[in-house]
Image 1 (cartoon, rainbow, N blue to C red):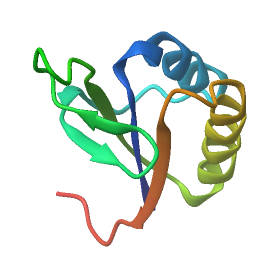
Image 2 (image 1 turned 30 degrees about the horizontal axis):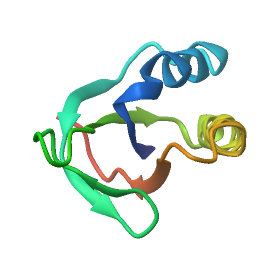
Image 3 (image 1 turned 180 degrees about the horizontal axis):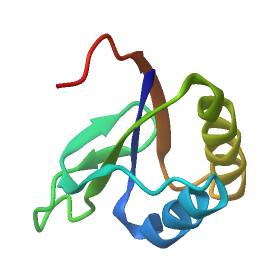
Amino acid sequence: MKMVFIVYNAAISDEVDECLKHCEIESFTKLPTVYGQGKQSGPHMGTHIWPATNSALMIVCDDEKVSSILEQIRQLKAAMARVGVKAFVFPVEDIV
């Protein structure tokens, strides 16, 4: 099992949701508002100075699903080059 952790500009939530549908992902945890900054995206702090925010998804799935999720994120990243989206993959050792 793996966990795919996706952090993205909240402005593209609908597009990320479409990626999940395309990959037939039904189980996930969504963090609707997260703050941070990246080298390319700049600060996303939800303030009057830095008003943008990010969202995050945690998807635990079988190893076979990971490549299709990452491919969808790559395509989204290419289509939305000016809007940040990143995906990270972690091993899942146990689920209780």
